[in-house]
Image 1 (cartoon, helix red, strand yellow):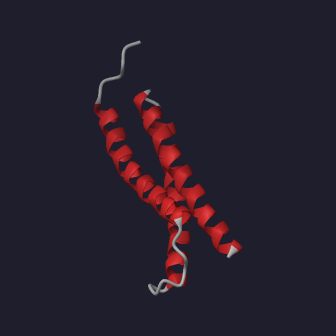
Image 2 (cartoon, rainbow, N blue to C red; image 1 turned 180 degrees about the horizontal axis):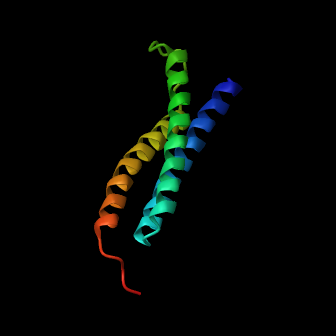
Amino acid sequence: MEDLETTIMELLVNAGTARSSALTALQMARRGEFADAEKAMEESREFVKHAHTIQTKLIGLDEGTGKLPVNLITVHSQDHLMNAMVIQDLAGDMIELYRRLPPAQS
């Protein structure tokens, strides 16, 4: 059971870090720092990829039969992953929009 909790926490941490990196990328793009924004987005994508791998492992262990207990932290980790992926999509589009704007005047 402890291994399962550790795995779920790893999913949560990776998804949360992916979300934070995507939001950081958006802030960088707002300042016109597009190279740094792309690096932060790539970091976000790597964290989502890792979180998704963990999620796939958990789904495989469950086999769709309810073998794994569903508790609040499991649901919370899944929510974090979903939010990270949505924020990545939106951040990517918004960064592209920032690229099209004229540079801000100081």
